Length: 219
Image (cartoon, rainbow, N blue to C red; front, side):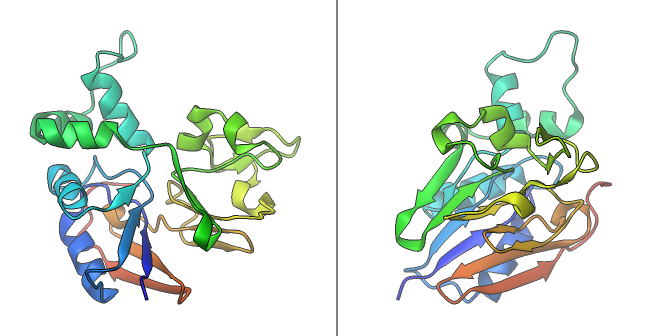
């Protein structure tokens, strides 16, 4: 039986990605799905993208992936300087890696699993087709008045308000860490910040994780 291995924010931690796949007991027929933020902050963004591309992994676009794509495309905000963590990505990815990264969608549906994968989140009560792309990449919280926010301290976790029917698998929110709600699972456990890299595997409904080899950047 094919398993689907959903993996949280890798952020250039290529060795930890290898270790997690080994921890999961990945088999050739298993499907691997990355929840975005493949690049930036960690030591080997190019290695992560290359592994994903060459091994046929699925992935959605994260806010850091989007950021480097915008800079490369000349869409950087006026007056803004490129941070070293993003400059390193621009300097190391090969043309075929950029093409693959640019092909990533903002969300991915797996109807046979009743699963929807998005990097950051979904605003409850809004149809998927009407969700704002910026929030798909950056959402963290729902304020007391029901409006969405990119800030972790602005309200409750959006996933705590999500009522399905699909299970949403997401990342982005390292400050909250592993999140398990009735209809949503958050997998960003802060590997690049010295935490862990985490996977959720279906149909067995099992969580796997491996520790970061070191702290690459501060949270």
